Amino acid sequence: MDRRLFVSDLARYAALCAVVPNVWRVTSRPRFADDPFQLGVASGDPTASGGVLWTRLAPRPLEPEGGMDGLRTTVTWEVADDEGFTKIVKKGTATAAPELSYSVHVNLDGLPADRWYFYRFQSGGATSNVGRFRTAPAEGSLTPLSLGVASCQHWEQGLFTALGHLAHEEIDLVTHLGDYIYEYAGNPRTVRTHAGLEIRTVDDYRRRYAQYKTDPHLQAAHARCPWVVTWDDHEVDNNYAGLVGENGFESVEQMRTRRAAAYQAWWEHQPVTVPRAQSWADLNITRSINWGALARFWVLDTRQYRDDQACNDGTQLMCDAARDPRRGLLGAAQEQWLTNGLGASRSHWQVLAQQIMMAPYDAAPGADVRVSMDQWSGYPVARDRLLNAVAKRAPNRTVVLTGDIHTSWVNELHSDFSRPDKPVVAAEFVGTSISSGGNGAVVAPQRLDAMRSENPHMKWYENRRGYFKCIGATQTAGLPSIAA
Image (tube, rainbow, N blue to C red):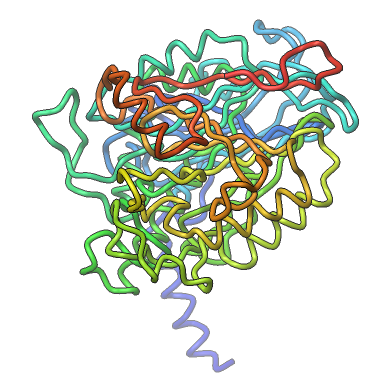
């Protein structure tokens, strides 16, 4: 290298360090303007030997960078047998970096199976709240499972008191099926107001997650037990499909940028194990989680890979476009992964943790068929193809968990809904919302009768708010197979 060029480059690097002195620094003695653990703690994706512990440093949650000063910051973590932390079984140090919004993801391993633990974080003299975490049962174990199922928590439409109740349940695991946040601009006429306009940038999404995570009920529910989390549409944009947004005015490039921002912020705020992102816009969150030999959870993504909704979206009369066999909801790779996995899995229960109602719901009386184009009903060929795979590979041991529509349903799933004589091969439990849609309402008996007459596979319906709880076991354990 030419000596003059070398000296010139060296001078530029020195000037950069003088102007931006914090680029490579890591501090173990940070000074916080306030409690840095205001967003709580969480754990998730348990395995028989570990799982994920999460927190995020944010002394001023709604300010830029959460009120942090730009320095990479060390955070210590501890896992103990007891809540007083007199018997610490694992501990370590992680680095919270500005590039990932000072989030911390600790991947635990090497713990005994089927055990409860306590965990906490510390940084700069501050200590987080204590969370409870458990490892999954060992391979081959038929340990029963107490499971909470939640979705749809619109900040502006109600308080998260249902999550406060969930935090006192004796449960092993929670599955959250999406709409963890809502993207809409703040409305001052609501119960409580979103900060800012409709969110589009990574900083917007980070601030929205931070606002939601300040809720004490949500924090308590996360601290109670590990969660298994997936996303639905409002983590990006209402009813989006792939790279098609709700309003139709955003270009593919704009939607890709928005999706990258939304997916990154989702990962930064959730206790999940997913592959390292090649591109945030293409983050793959499909994964399977074992609960011993009792259950295998298949965590699905019904947003990122789907074709656009047919027939102008919404609830519409069935049209030829919806019946096009080339249209899909899961994408070819995810669908193949799921169907192959259902055939290979020896777990007693196959549990699909997914977003949108799988059973069709015909809202039109008589011969007409009017269904939601955003649900599996708008992709009938893909739905029946999947249910046929269930019939061949895991009949009568498959349970579908669903969120999205702010009401509770129990549905029988036939192997082919185009043929009413086809057998029932699975059960679907649709959970209501935590707060979205307000308080709900009592459903008149005559309306229920009309719903059932058009949809005989519908076995139960209710329009209230909350969550539901499943008790999973084998018949030989002397407990109900599935109860909600």
